[in-house]
Length: 407
Image 1: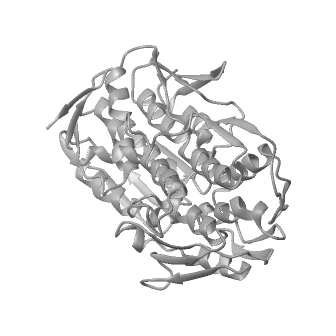
Image 2 (image 1 turned 60 degrees about the vertical axis):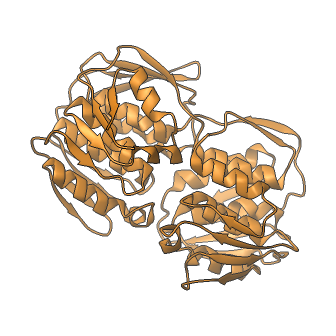
């Protein structure tokens, strides 16, 4: 599906209910599979979540999770402890290029039986479930937080719990805090002291009903829309918590630099364009929130502000190499971009109109570039890719005033 977007303004005081957090939902689905006493509300309807749910409910000995990276990491750990069951876990061609060796090595240290069916260190995997008696493992702290969370989620079911020692500077700490918070909510005892995380064995939990908070990553695109709009523009979004454990809540502070204010009220946030930004360039270390990089960079381009973003080494192993994808598309739009293994530097220029944005099978490329239609008409290739995390995105944009036509 190819869409052409244009929007000279958005409807003032728009209101939307955003989907549940994909990150929270997938963590809770795995915990629910381990502890059926848990019931869930407001779960995400994203493709990644559907892949996770289908895999957890499947009795097949072959599980194909497509492009769902979170599911690949979490399910590798989950099936490793499913005794007397052998599963082949596979995905899309791109998924088979995304490294998983760090997680597999850690699980093997705990006693897991996992074999590579293709290239060493990459899916597909043959996982023979067994009782894991190991209880201590050390991992580099700068690896994907999903590797660490995968271990933490199965930790309460391990024979002796888990002591996870982190070596070096921690990347994406908020996602680890989210995982530990959800474990505590269901009654699991955890601690996070300096570089050591401990999770106690928990045989069963009390019956509990948990509601998934809406997705701050999805909210980021509306922060970008408000930042690119006229002063006084407001959008109200639900359902969000002021004390959220989602790392992307950092939007609230970051977007103050772009003139956007946030008000929390009764489970909703109202985001308002209060003033125009006086800045000519911004510098952000995004180690803890790398998924915001595309949104922030597009906002800067739309406002004519330069940006220097660092802490982005994990973006090269996402659905695509996001740093290279951003460089390619920004240069088509007229900007100057320099990337390294960890950083992106962008210098804006007059934005070219009617440029076709390639999404590279990456939902965040489509989602992040859409707000730019407030400045110039743009075309989004393979626009259906948003279903990976936010299936109703294009409908919601129409509701707030965007003109969107299928080509």
